[in-house]
Amino acid sequence: MKTTLLSILTFSVLVANAQKEKKQIPPKEKFVTIRMSKLPMAEFPRNSIRVSGITVIQSLSDSFRMGYTLKGMDNAVATLKFSKPLSQILQEQVKRMYKHEYKKDGAAIFWVVKELRFGAKSGATANSFTRIVTSPDCSFTRFNADAYISDDGNLFKKICTIDTVLVVLNMGSEHGPDLENAIRVLLRRTLLAAEHIPEQNSVKMTIEEISNEASQQVNIPILTDGNYHEGIYTGFGKFLANKPSENAYEIVMDKKKKVKFTTEGQNGQRDTIEIWGLCKDGKIYKYHNETLIPIKKEGHRFIISDYVEETTRLNNTTPGFGLAIGYGLLSIPIFSYQKKNRPLLVESIPYIDDPERQPIATCIDMKTGELSF
Image (cartoon, rainbow, N blue to C red; front, side):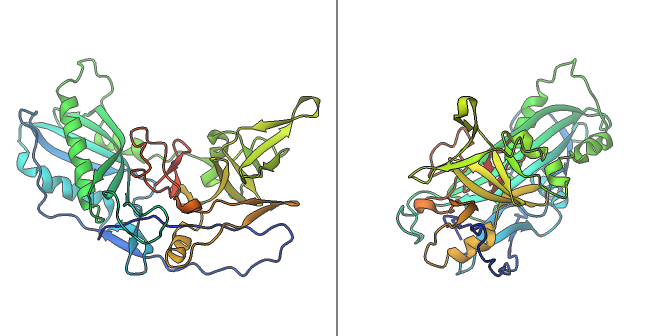
């Protein structure tokens, strides 16, 4: 079944001194299992180097939750997962795809998959929540991997890295073919790089050394600290360090409900501050296109707050409205996920500039601070 994540998400934080609402119990997490083909079609390019085997491991911060999709007649948001541990899935599928190409006297290849996440989107009418497809379905794969090669199977040298978002049109929602597509891209890039390895290529490492290096977790305070410090983040680095720049700021909202942050400048004037985000009352917001987007920590990443439960609920009801966050007498609207019937999109992929093809944003890219899926 083709899927679409064109849905709305409203966020609300009570105005100061307002009576506290009863906390809603979030729905039980739903899952969709990604199925892998047992008889994939794959082969090496002609005249490629001889390969004795391919070993693959993963070092994802979250190797269980692979993304989101919609499930069932009620279009509930479900988490994508594999039926087995990701390391096992990767190794099994690589073997299924390429074992018939292996030669005993060939080079050994070693892959480290560092990022893997799936998303999907299909077109819909601009003024309706009815799922009428008007453009080809898009399937997205965020894929980051390093490739190493060895002549003797003991010492490996790094030959290439892939860090990209792969887009496939008219793709179903299972995402198994997406993973196979990513493996094919990595294989061709690896074999091409292997033909042009400089003799002076420096560092050689064992598989154990590469694995240990890949498994080292970066100590990011915003992920490890017990409390968030109040204030504004003037840059993504300040957010990662859990060190807001200052608390002396004011929020200004114009007639179009666009939000800006100001601070006292020279001669009593107010200067506009360029910020990445804000921490207020223990909650974190990303500042994006002059709006505030609530985000929350999930594992080793930050996702858009209440994405799953709110999208599921609002997919089956009349579109609602974003409420407000209180700053004294001023109430600031919080981002509504389907504001003006348009979803929040991932706009940071330079080669995907058509909104019809851009993924639906669900989380923060923890390397760049941009919206991601």
